[in-house]
Image 1 (cartoon, rainbow, N blue to C red):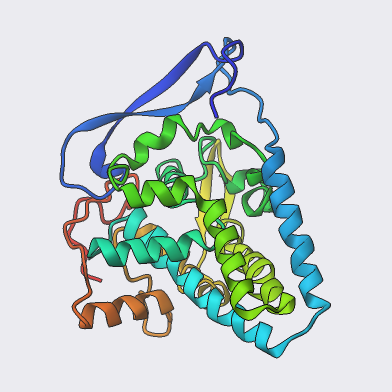
Image 2: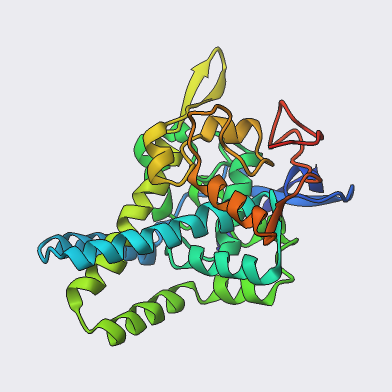
Length: 323
């Protein structure tokens, strides 16, 4: 949301090659808003997003309530939905939409985007906007969930604000203009909450068991939330080296297992336009395994023409990446 006009007197723009932001071969440049600044040259104060706080608190309350109605069938529903929506995030939102590391049909892309939407982590365009901004300004003051502000900030607290670290969601939609032509993605992005509520209602109508509903939706969503948030908090750590703040990335086997490969985060930042996060034989990447199955089935293929740019992969900029 754009801050009030009284607070914001000018915008700061940066010219960045298109390929530095999202996968494309175009050489054009676009203007990316770094943030709103006041007369003192500072970003405006962050404003609490009451709806975000209420949603996160309510989902955690319902997740705890689910634990008081233990159910084996509920656990099975949780695991199945966790796999479906988790793959929707790592393959659909992350590797396919954010980095274009995989090429597939609009139908397959739409299905994975729908699965990602059911994770209740925001619509696809919103998610991709935050993620591309994170790669552009990793651990900088413009990174919405910079770990420079501590573990809790990068894990959870940044979502309590409308403009974390001065980030403007509306202005930064320039980062996803390559996806904005898709009416399906725009529909999912605009109706993410309604889609989740509808899915929960359909689930309850089919099974008519409240315990299954609590396990398959609130508890599963909260578990998946923390699996994803650990990538931002545990796999990132900012340190002050001299006068510069630098990001220290780490790989985590545990986070990779519960996050379908996302825990190999240091690998990902080294080669962001690669669909494969596995750099060593023992680094198991479940998301990549599913992509390989799709590739063997001729339903998807790796995109070797992706240009991630120096801002997304310092060691592999402008080079053909063989996963």
